[in-house]
Amino acid sequence: MSQMPFDVAETDRLLTTTRSVRRRLDLDRPVPREVVEQALEVAVQAPTANNHQNWRWLVITEAGVKEKLAEMIRSSWAFHRNDMWTNAGRRRNDAQARRNYDSAQALTETIAAVPVLVIPCVLGRPPDIAAINARWRARMADKIADDPGHLVQHGETRASIFYGSIFPAIWSFQLALRSRGLGSTITCLHVPHERETGRLLGIPTGVTQVCMIPVAYTLGTGFRPADRYRAKERTYWERWGQ
Image 1: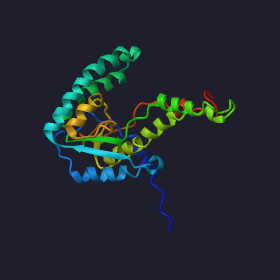
Image 2: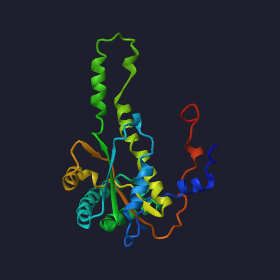
Image 3: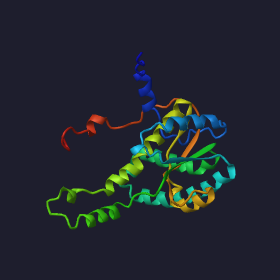
Image 4: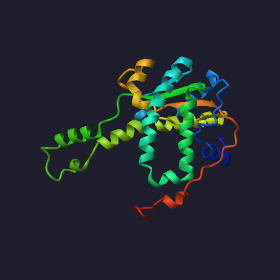
């Protein structure tokens, strides 16, 4: 007996209303461990290149540890916001850009109080694209000029595989949280302090901390689709620009 198709309307509602939640995280309502574990079990069903499954998830709930992480995040934000706003140009006058900026600022002030912080990690370090391509060119040095291998660059592929195997799982985790009444967002502001974070949390130097996901129940559930350009306005068929 074949399974029934998904309720497309309900699936689309989940996909189009899973927002980056920063200011509407409920800082007072505890998040049960089993809810996070359920969402992570959903996450690890995401596609992974060559079935590596080389993701690891570090869940932090200890108040003292979260405060130390928050100090690093506030330090990073102080530098990032100046650089971001300096290079923002006309976007500084865009209302949505202003809201995003204010929302990110608010999260840096409250992140220590968020019930759960999750750090998705990948075993290994990000590929050095230039070094990989250089090694390949060296291997091809004695090949005939019209060998098709001269047209190949492996560095970009390795980088795509490295991050492409974790972000589908991260998004699945966020969707699973949303379906259970919780909100989340992706922040990378602890990454400039990756070594210090690693020492604090016992993360080996050979493991990459990809981002951080604050997790909490939401204040209200009335999330709606974002104001986006229509896909057809930015989609080409067969050739770029068509």
